[in-house]
Structure formats: C-alpha cells, structure tokens
Image (cartoon, rainbow, N blue to C red; front, side, top):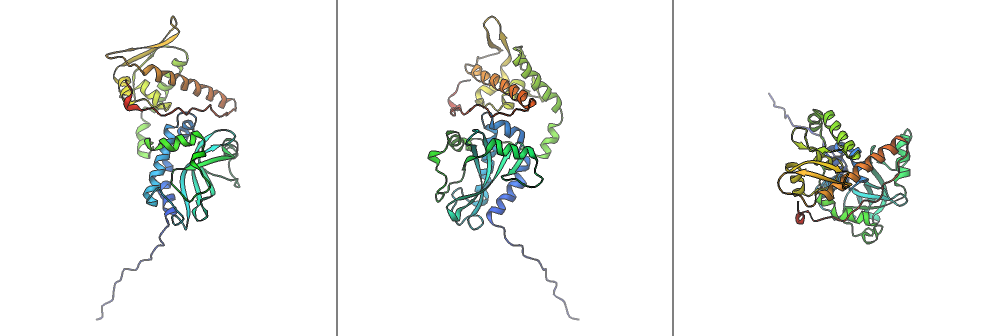
Length: 317
C-alpha cells in the first residue's frame, strides 16, 4: 500500500508595502478610538488633546516605516501617507491631517484626509457626501498650508523656517503629549455615572459663569471636580498644582466686595493656582459663547490661543 504525501498547501499572500501597513495600523489601533468632538474642541483651545493624537500617529509612523526620516525609497515606491497639520490660510483654523506625498517627485502633495469633528474626511467632493462635511472642509480649512511630523530632506515644497508660528509650535511640542484613546472597554466603564458626571460639570460651569461658590467635591468616585474642569477644558496644569487642587483646594468663590475670585484651602497656599483658574474662567466663557453661536447657526473661528510652552518642572504649586 503506497503512502500519500499529506503536504500542507498554502497560498502566499502578497506582502503589503509600508504605506498600506501604516494605514492598516492606524485604522485598527488609533483612528476608531479618537474622540473627534474633543479633538475639534482642542483645535480651538490649547491643542493638548490634538498634540497627543498627533504624537500617536507619529509614533505609529516610526513603528511601521522604521524611521521618521523618509526618502524616495520609502512607502509604496515613494508614495507615503504620513501625519501632519494644516492651517487654513484665510480662516487660521488648525486641523490634524493625514497627508499623501510622492517622495519620488520631491514630496509632491497628492491628497489630504482631515481629522475633523465628523471623523476622518478625505479632501474632495464625492457623490452622496453630507453637505455639512463639504461646507466644513471648504469653509473652515481651504485653502491651507501644511506640515508633517516626518523629516523629508528631499521635499522642496515645505520649508519649516517659513511655516506659520502655530504650525512651528505644534511641531516643536507635540512629542510632549500622548492622548488617551477611548476603547470599547473604556466606554463601558465610563457609562456608569456618566450622566451624573456630565451634570456635575455643567452645573460647575454654570456656577462659575454666575459667580457662585463652587465646592471642590469628588466626582466619578475619587476625582476632584475642579481638577476635572481643567481636564475637560484641556488646560495643562503643572503636576504639583494639580496635586494641590486634588488634596488641598476646598472651594472657589467670588468676592463682590473685592470684585475678584478667591479660594478656601487647607495646608500650604498655592501661589499659581489663581493664574490657571483665570484661564479656566476664560475657557468656560468661550465654551458658552461657542455653544450659543452654534445654536444660532454661527460657527466662527476662535481667536489664536497659542501661548509659549512653560517649564512645568520649575513651577511652584
């Protein structure tokens, strides 16, 4: 009796190039878990969350392409998709983007995907596309200047020295931030008490706008309400000051006699808290104005809010 060879027959799949693998990676691990409403708000405030998302996309680029220095041999025969930032030349609006470049022709720009409040939106007008998306991209961002996080010496189209200061600032500082993505397991956990939390934040914002005393209660179990307000409005508070807010700050109140805000606390007094609190007041007021404009069908770009980066290590509480 003759034996038969039981060979394991497999079909070899074609190897994907780096550009395809990068797109697959961010589609599976980053883009579905970005909070796009928060990202849109971040563009209009201090860019903390936006910088964090940009850093995740940048780190993924290095992981897949193997380096942040790219040339004509990388990607799909020189065609690469990489993370970047755009600024509307007429509106001044900022937006993260995925840029398609042809490095075989000195970095010629072929396409853009905007990371906006509606998700990832490809530049162009397509059949059946939501009118709101067309208007957002057209009115908010075009025409635009762009830059990217990669280093591409052969690109003759982007000169970092002549970029707008906002784009320079983002490129200089985005590596200092890393966004926390919201994955399905996180969403399930956050749903517990979410309504109560959102109500507490809204009530706190209302009290600040009405100059009422705000007690620094715990929310979501063990989180300080005022610390969460800073987080919600993406105001980067130094670690020492944040620890003081969580452990020592009891309440904030408005003194009609002095026409200024003050605060109750235990232990050592913070010398810088009031400076950050004033930023919070401005952010709350801006949010209210933005919500009122949105309700009235107005969506104007915000005033530039790009302050120079501060050295948190040297700050007092």
